[in-house]
Length: 384
Picture 1 (cartoon, rainbow, N blue to C red):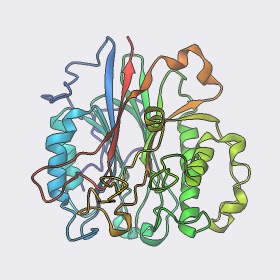
Picture 2: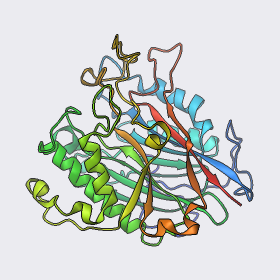
Picture 3: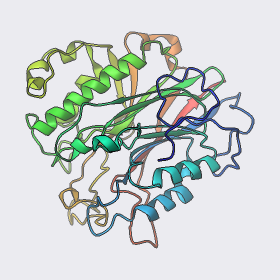
Picture 4: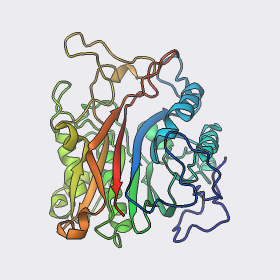
């Protein structure tokens, strides 16, 4: 597979990413809608456009309906979407069994995405496992990267090495964005109860993610934004028509906030082997979508309206998710307590006014959307 070995040029404080692909070759980009960085990082105020998307490019042979149109959708993504962003976080961009991830890396490089970090791929075939399908691609230098693989999941996820990746992205001469990307244990239905084994494995993996974030963020100054994105395999919406917080989302928020919020979860997670939970760092968790929209948006199983319930997409969406009107994907900003109250903490901001649900509607193809998930985007505003 391509992308297993980092390039020979050093990455600075690269961290343990020896079998990921963190790439920093000489600059050759010709640009696109987002201009190339040219000879260096902009010195004045500028904006960094961030996208998170479950791109739904699963391994060969896995599909929801007759065809997932994987190659055609990847071509569309490379031709129409890549050039609009500066930092792109992908879930379900698997390397296993095809050259699609290698093709994406090659095409992205032509548009100035000279840096990336991906889920590990080495040594998985012999273990009967598939990589985690995570990528962070950037036009800006990734100066440090870390990865973690969660304890093996159950059901179909027992074949996947799901986990999280972290990228420290230099977005200014003295400014960095700390980007975490994850996908956790899936469930059969967004209505699966908390006590279901798959739900417990999901929660256990989210706790592991929190420990990973805590460890990676020990030395992050409060002026640098910490952004957590990904597919958390739960529905944040209370119901199909109600975009307020669900119980699953409230539990997710508790875990991410940390501290005393985790005190009573040991007993719940005992069936999946979790014996003790560290309180960890305490964060104020900002949900950028909720700040922008005052509710959780529909990102999977959308419908034209709540009267006809006509689904907007059926070619890629599984039958179980058609019309489900769910929100499993998030863009969080994590602000450490009490440091977030420092005057330095608001220097670089993810502006919720710039948040957008990216539907990526496609015309003239056999598929009407780029993925079964909508994407999310926002802008990081960088000062001098």
